[in-house]
Length: 231
Image (cartoon, one colour):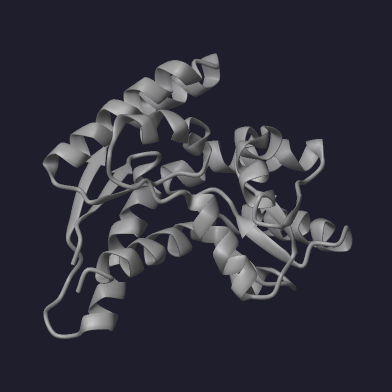
């Protein structure tokens, strides 16, 4: 089994899900006392959030690249960046390591394709929904990608940063997300990508009339698949 390096802390709420799902998946696949071989580097999200607000993406890229290099030095054989938003600086991370960085959009696009869906809506932070980095990566796999209107982008972003990254889950916010999803389905979305690793703490398959694609689970299960290929 290969060793998976988790570059997390953005936020730790979703990084804990990566750890849990990785170990549960390995136990299901191998049985007995098996668990995942993991190395975790959890950054201080306050540092990243400050750089996001200031638009200092180059500095954020350098910070995460240095932590990815530390994961490789510690023995990681494949690296996961445990956040959708910070894949904006994925190229900086890839340049800093020699082991594979498993891109969250590639894993998600593969899951969407397996489901036979071609038009998806992307929910995430405002950075993810407004900037092209994730949409273009998904589109490169042949997907048509929709995003909410500006009002809904602001509302979704607000819930993520005011509530979900702090572990706060409310029925009011779940209803808000359901409304956003319904409007996207009315525009033609055949599936919903939960493109922020905290969103699946709030909504799931029961909150959408079309299939949902939870990027946290998809990402870490793809990593476990890659790790177990070594057996």
